[in-house]
Image 1 (tube, protein in one colour):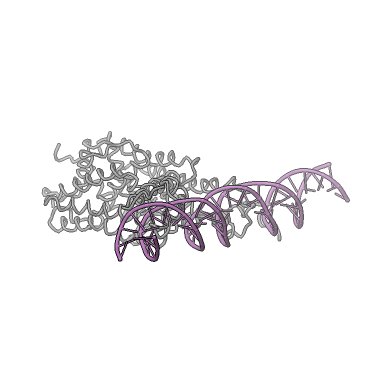
Image 2 (cartoon, rainbow over the protein chains, first blue to last red):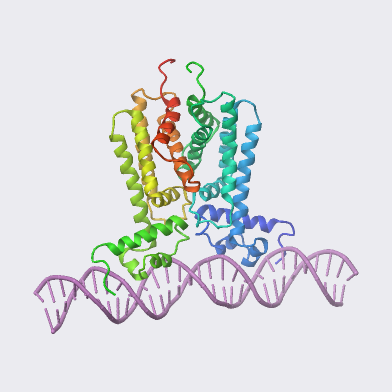
Length: 203
Length: 203
DNA sequence: CCTGTCTCCTACCGTTCGGTAGGTTCATGC
DNA sequence: GCATGAACCTACCGAACGGTAGGAGACAGG
């Protein structure tokens, strides 16, 4: 049989198969055997490209977190208007979710899974916090600029917004009913801001 | 060695050990062997009380979901005032969380885990929806009664509230920093309602 | 033509998995 | 005292697990 990939094609094939399996069954319930079968590759080939099962998983999860981070930063930088930034964040994550549902699934599942479920060496918590801090920092600045109700701490505001958005994403994983589009993003921001925005009428 | 439990003591011991293991490592990564070692019981004893590993897990998860459901219903029935009902729900779940952190962990993790991660026969989705419907129904009635802004659908409102509350719980699993007490519950409801409550000033 | 390196293979390692066969001990009913 | 059934045990099963030893085929430089 000819060498399939002097480039990185085999590696990509493994990643693709692994993503599908991990997204469907989680880390522990996924076997390396199934991955190599899906990728039409032998087991030593997998271990040629990746140090072990955990390393393969980490490559996927890191990519997902980093891409979410990049998208959120990009959304924040896309405009100066605070409301528009929020809409851009939600909207960007919705689009990413619809295109990369499986990556998003392992990313979210990993974040809230039991500590021993996922490989221990994986530093996913840092990346989770980093992503949250994008929102948190945005809230801090908006609060300082007077766009948000000062009765609430920036952390509370970030929780309110982040929580609502995340529930939409998670709900879509288990019940893919709702429509994750820009109008929905705008309505989410409206619901959040109608309370969080500082009222200039009273106090 | 004497028979330890003519009552249900051994069964409880198994459940206790299983909860600890499942909460720490998730379903797939937990082995029956470890459970029976923790419970100081032999493997056939476990299979004497439970049909299989999945049945043992289901017993725990069902209990957690049912208890959450009971608490939320109780909170709703505790008062007529809508705002007080919301605070009661959040506050009750916070208390339950602090007392039953491990049960809450497997309950939440199961809800958002990959479909193949958890035993397939487990009907947890029904219970998740049932719990969500407690909130959803409450929002429906409050919206119809004019307590909530009619520009938002009841489902959106439920998502906003439920999402925010859930993030507090989930965040406390990974970063047990924040304080899950009644003042926090009130602030969450305030943040949610300051937007969702119908303003009688304009429109 | 030889040698090394990159890529990928078959075959196998020891371990652990979920689950069971079959037997033993105790409390009780008769 | 003796059968019965609940409560539990030791010892083991086949299968699947993550991972590896060792080699084969293709291509490069010398």
